[in-house]
Length: 319
Image (cartoon, rainbow, N blue to C red; front, side):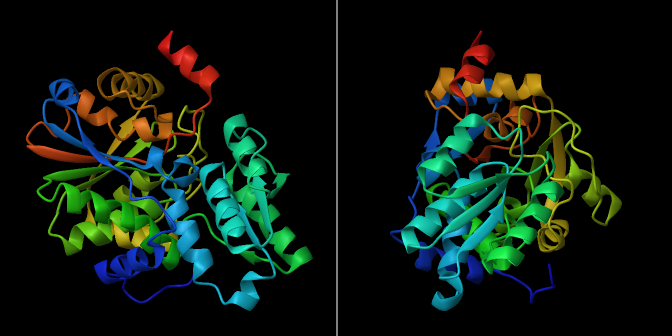
């Protein structure tokens, strides 16, 4: 990813104008029962109600929409564990062009089915983000299509930032914001909005063993990890994006790591208190509050990134 001129809140507000009518303005919900568990007032940005069930629709739709029509007509390609795959497939369908997606061999069945239902062609490639990136590059060479990166691109970041923009319109006096992190697109967009709205405390949340952003922030440079097993299948990059990290290191106040048991507990707590079903990657963002983190905050925002979860897994977690 090449360096890019400094991004600001204005990039996100421009993206919001372009996306009007193409994505859902999802609800920002508050539950007193959940407040009681968290020990603070919690505002949930419910991207599980977004098109394709995840925030990724925002970035993909914005990025594909910004392509030159002739370039877009050659077809679009991406590499993703699931939600970005569905988002690019949706954007291709909306714009009437072909989509080809490289997905991991262990991608959740619910996400594979979603991509196929949107008419995209799937190539299964290895188990890491680098495996599928290499596959996407080969597809691009063979077909002449355009790669839509999953997170490391200014148009993706600006699109993802619109979720936080809406949350702060609904709940303007947040003391802190919790963001689940995979490659860092949702986080980078959140940071741009938070810095432009004087919200100084943005925190990352990642699974234990899949903490590329936390390790990178601690080291002051991007660090590669070998992702371990986790319920948070959307939070498993080998390395966070270059532009995403450059933005995050200017704005992030701290990092939290959560394990599978904490993600499961957060998913169950959301179901019990709010009747909202999310995927473990989204529930991860709530988990630090349930173990007593940020107890000094009066009002905390939580980005629930998506709801594409296999129902058999939900049954096991509830049992």
